[in-house]
Image (cartoon, rainbow, N blue to C red; front, side):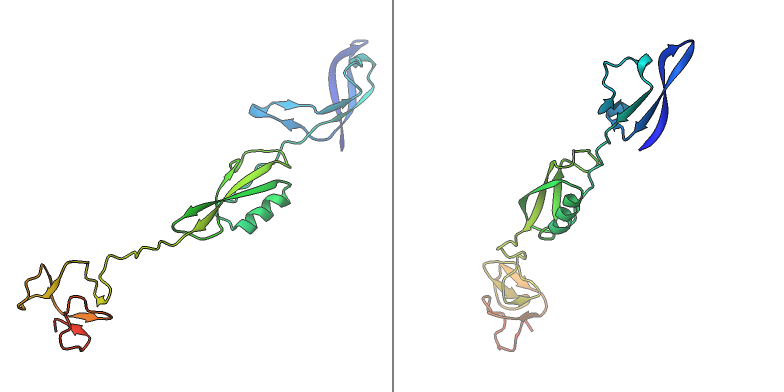
Amino acid sequence: MKDVLVRTGARRGGRALRMAASVAVLVLGAAGTAAVAEATPADSTTAASVTSARLLLAQRNPALPSVVGKTKAKAVSVLKARGYKVKTKTKTVKRGKNGVVLSQSPKARTRPAPGSTITLTISKVTKSTKSSSNCTPGYSPCLPPASDYDCAGGSGNGPEYVYGTVQVTGSDPYDLDRDGDGYGCD
């Protein structure tokens, strides 16, 4: 602690009294306000009778760091190292990385007291079971599903037509590879 002299409003013999004070840390509130956590001697002592005083002041809570985007393990480690309790919940998402912090509560840069619980929302990525492409299996390039395809310029009646050669990579539901060489409409 650092000893400082504090000027009081009390006067003795026309001289302002001074108190020696050991200052610890100050509690800072909103809009620059401050509060003394504890003072010795007690408030009942008059300033005129004080020759020295020991003031104990509390420290402002540190700003909460942002852990959004970090892995669950890293985020929990950072917060616990700073004295916070951590609670997690998961949120199912369709894309992104699994096990990453999507949000935190309270938000970053707020000043919760050490020992407070910080809630993290962690991603759980699920893959869609539906095919992401809208193609008929077995053809390259893609042929969007239709009731039938025929080769353009041939004798077929559509309703859809293939212009150019198409590779048959599996089954041939539209019967485009009539000679069985792996290429349709060639």
